[in-house]
Image (tube, rainbow, N blue to C red):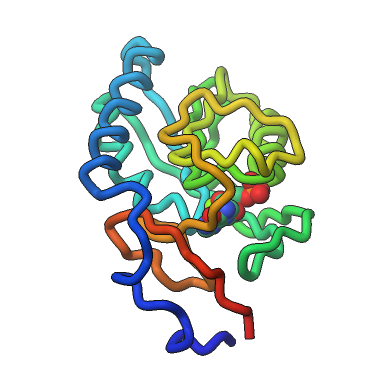
Length: 186
Ligand code: IMP
Ligand code: MG
């Protein structure tokens, strides 16, 4: 276990997007999704744990009939490096056949997770699958993926807050901050 006391204090990390900027953008994304769905109901599928806060805010910004589900994948990412393979450790709990799905993800990085999840959800035969990622790091992509809704496209920085963690810390920060330098994992 890393010693959390060795991690930089949140207030020393530079803010990349403030809570106000996030709120404005999430509301825009919600309006766009509502328009695209033409008022039809949707299943919002949050990818745990990072998307929990984004899911909560986006759901309230979409303002149409919706249900929630969550999935959890393990990409063996203990800290900031991905070692590749994704395993599903929690699947959907409600049937989504014939329904619209919006997959809600905190950050699209290498694309490995969403690539895997998209193929997995296709097997559940929804009538459509859209992907909403609050952040995108296009320079890190190793697998192709098309996200229909992107909040902000960012450079290759490691970010924390608004649900996103480093070794499980920082998830509850209301702003998105850059973790620099990235601490050594103990
Ligand atoms: P991908 O499979 O590489 O696209 O991984 C996406 C997942 O990696 C995200 O859902 C996050 O959980 C995690 N991740 C990638 N970049 C960051 C970051 O900068 N901060 C925190 N988590 C990240
Ligand atoms: Mg995630």
